[in-house]
Image (cartoon, rainbow over all chains, first blue to last red; front, side, top):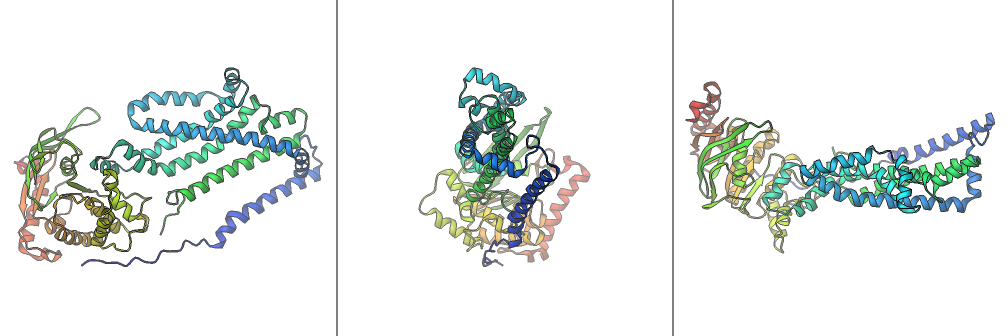
Amino acid sequence: MTVQAAPPPRRKSRRPSTAALYEVAVPLIATALFFLIWEGLCRTFHAPAYLLPAPSAIWTDTMAIGPTVFGHTMATLKTVILGFVVSIAISLPLSIALTASPAVAAALYPFLVWTQSIPKVALAPILVVVLGSNELPRVVITVLVAFFPLVISMATGMLSVPPELVELSRACRASKWDELWRIRLPYAIPFIFAGLKVAISLAVVGAVVAEFVNADAGLGFLIQTSTAFFKVPVAFGALIILSIMGVVLFQIVVIAERVLFPWSSSNTAPTP
Amino acid sequence: MIGLNRVTRVFNSRDGDQVTALEDVSLTIERDEFIALVGPSGCGKSTLLRIVAGLILPTAGTATIGGQPIREPRPETGIVFQAPTLLPWASVMDNVLFPLRMMHRIDSTSADKAAALVKLVGLAGFERRSPRELSGGMQQRVAICRALVHDPDILLMDEPFGALDALTREEMTLELLRIWSERPKTVLFVTHSITEAVVLADRVVVMSARPGRVAEIIDIESDRPRSFHVEGNAAFHDASRRIRALIFGQRHDGPGRAAA
């Protein structure tokens, strides 16, 4: 009674066009409506530009110093990316160490929690004194803000491996390295990407916090200087650019996961 | 082939107590013999399996394979667990090849061997599929291939069909008989199902719980090839009744009498 089932044809994963409509069109229309209402309110009530500038005023004032704003944007982007990359570089070995043995975990956790309990805004000026007025303290602040959820999600992911697979690995007399590389890390991928999504958003926050304290460039710096001179529309412009930067970077992480690890569970809806 | 001589295993529980999972278990298993281990929960069936697999060492007594003491996992054993636990990112083929990869024993013949196994379990054509696309029974077939890919002499199965529905379970039981007749192995098969044990095994080892001991070893004298038709046989009936009496009798009379 053998069942030599012929494989059924693969189902084409064709997205219905309504899904694309909801994913792209509806958010765009909602955003456009939001700005339209904002513009309309400002014009109706003649809100002063130093309190609530109209979107049109934000656009003209920001574009008037376009090249300068672009320079500030690139400065912030550099800090965010550097901080994000360093966060990954620190979190990966740290999470491997945390999951390697309970003793190591017990030794490291207090330090990790301690780095999180320090208010980063309070730490920033001290770091500037210690590390000098350059990119370094900004990256350090960004890392301190961004790395913690990454470490936790990576460690959780590596501990999510079914115990049977660990037994199978032992039964094959595989090395710890093979177990890490071929079982634990791939299993952690969905968790790692969940952490990366949080980390990239926090990296933007960290970079701006660092720029408030110590910078001669960057969107955080631009917001501080422009509000000091009541150039509120420019500050709003910087704010909008920051939020766009956050969304775009987040989406890059989402797309990277879909392209590199299509099997990752956070991508795929369960197949019926 | 496999020798267990007065094997005892004690675990230290978290609150400091000592739990005896296995006590004084002796068992000799011949080459290519099919042994089923049945018993209530907590009778140490899985512990016994893991001792043979070399994943757990006995606290006292000796466990041997081919006369050699088992001190670590040995290449002549393959394991199937209750859950298929396939790698979700790897294709059926890569899942089957996975143990060879972990052992660094991949060579030019590996792919052919794996393909032959996939065909043997009736999954030809599914080699490039991902585990997600397979049903529970199909996934467990892949897990059986994975256990057989390094051509072990001994196949250890820990309630391999326990997570499947009743119909798939019967189908897989017959599949296993067919696979076993085509690729004879020494099989140690842990199960909760008395029917499954009697249909499959040459000998059924009935165990009692707390501490886990061998209550009785029952020979199943039924001709092979078998199917579920043997359920009607008198020999099958007697064996089933005897096993049932041993397992449920212990519950009423306490473990002492049955274990003696």
